[in-house]
Picture 1 (tube, rainbow, N blue to C red):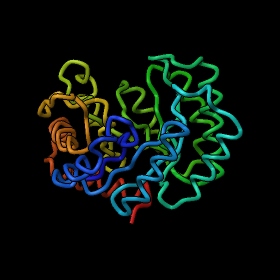
Picture 2: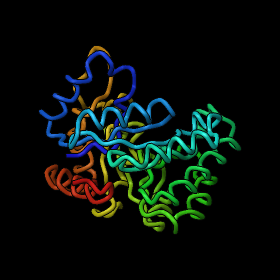
Picture 3: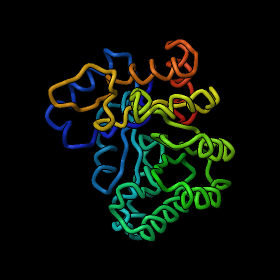
Picture 4: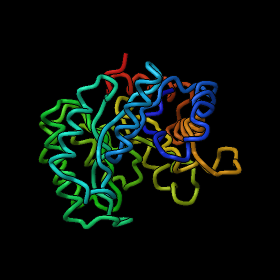
Length: 259
């Protein structure tokens, strides 16, 4: 399996990151894409990927929570990071109107600025959208013809939103949200409509610990929990777990241009 989105640069992993990677390998997670979501985490994601060649890869971007940090200087830094082969995608970037940690206009400006940058760089983009589909879709639609590939990560939206993203040729990332029989009920029903070739799985660690996974004292999600995502997704799609693991790993290698 390949975890296409884990925030391993998060400080909650600073005390046991090597053990986290060992547990991931033991659970059958062969590679992890470390998400960059700010200036610091993007730099740290690259450092981690360079320290673990062939096992960790990185993205570089600015999460909408930090949209107020978007400047030409940050754009130049992201461009520099993208020049490293370990950085396999740009983002995460997008819109988040659920938390509203940044003004909507600032979010839209940072999102469009990053898509413009991604289009010029030519790498795939890792997208974030929560409670913002109406504003997110037109911006993505404008830039999509210039983007080589795009994945809407941590998808939790409606069937209609899914159809919009599939119509734009996007991949879709599924997290442990699907393991929650309360919040994830609609996603469980919707997941069967994602074509095999567009499906990716991720943990979004340390967030979104699957409700079906064994509980730990710290309640922190980690890549070793990816099998629970694959299991729930397989059940939702009427497939076996091995099939989901195999096809999502192949999709990840193709999408991120991994060896």
